[in-house]
Image 1 (cartoon, rainbow, N blue to C red):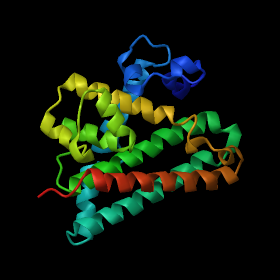
Image 2: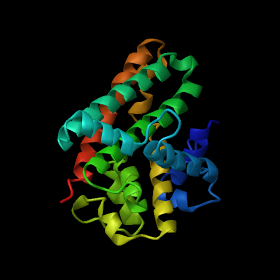
Image 3: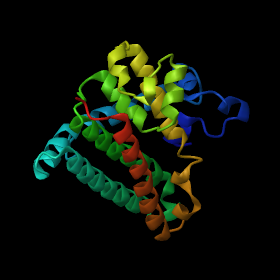
Image 4: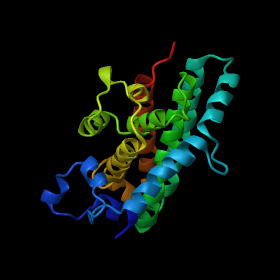
Length: 239
């Protein structure tokens, strides 16, 4: 059983699977949740996806470079960032799906991490351009929540947090304590990983060598474009 299976609890009974992502994240003894692995996944998205690591540039730098390249026009800069990251996601999807079923046990986890790293940086860069402080812990959690789309409201509701008008950036005003933010972050991580077994990330076409590369590229580009649309809504221009 791989890391994603162990974190998401795939193979559990239907009764066990009815538990919410937040409840799973809260339960350290749940055999379907490997706490350390889940925390590492979330920390990687926050640290590498937002702050950068090695050759993976930080979101703030990506935002600043896009603004300079587009004469300070925020919306043109955002369009450029989205195009760049869709290309990166498509390339990642192509390479990690190229081998089909034979390489899927190794390639699928790599694809999932790579995809969400790209999505996190893109979203954080959009937030930065729109005037948000992406070093703020609440804004960083809002970035993660934007990755799960409509599910974000459900996760926040279960955590006892209300974001009026669907704005995740309201988290900054609520000043949630660190433990609460950490729990929401873990719930987001669990929700993201739990999608890999049943969602479009594992359609049959990906199991076919060569064809899988094209399917992977198209699927990841489509999904990232949806996240880009969500990020534009969740991070309206400040001021």
